[in-house]
Amino acid sequence: MASRETTAAHVVKETGATFIHPSNDYRIIAGQATAALELVEEIETLDFILAPVGGGGLLSGTAIAAKALNPRIKVIGCEPKNADDAYRSMKAGRIIPSENPNTIADGLRTSLGDKTFPIIRDLVDEILLATEEEIITAMRHIFERMKIVVEPSAAVPLAVLLSNQLNVADKNVGVIISGGNVDFSKFFDEMLTSIKR
Image 1 (cartoon, rainbow, N blue to C red):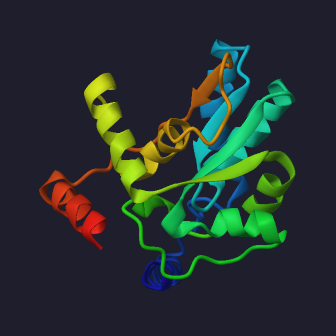
Image 2 (spheres, rainbow, N blue to C red):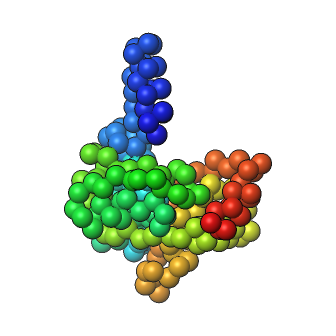
């Protein structure tokens, strides 16, 4: 993370480029909101929307769009148990940065920012956690049942849903599945290694 920030700062300085944070930027949050907007417009009777949370851009956008269209929708943030800074931040009422997150869901290793945290704190109903094994099971379910390639981060909301942490009996549930960055040459070896740790 520090290396990425240093490199980005160097590029900005040398080229005059504009840095846009990948999650902690209102433009990114607005763009991410379109996933929930399309979902709620298509299925107006949703009771829950589950979305992954790392830096919080997608979850912030999801919460804004969902609550604007239907304030009764419960928005649930879904996070790896091994990278639970958003969960801890919600409980503490302040940002608690991620320290040494160790999860296969590498897209969710980032911390909430000063723009995403207040939105999540005010609009997200709950943040729930998924274990590494639950994430892998959810990925496998998506591969086998839906024939969709997803990265571990994208499978976290389904992992939370399949773990029965929410009472969704007779409810309409939307799950945001976003991201398909999978390096298959290393992917399965890494999954096996992470389980053995």
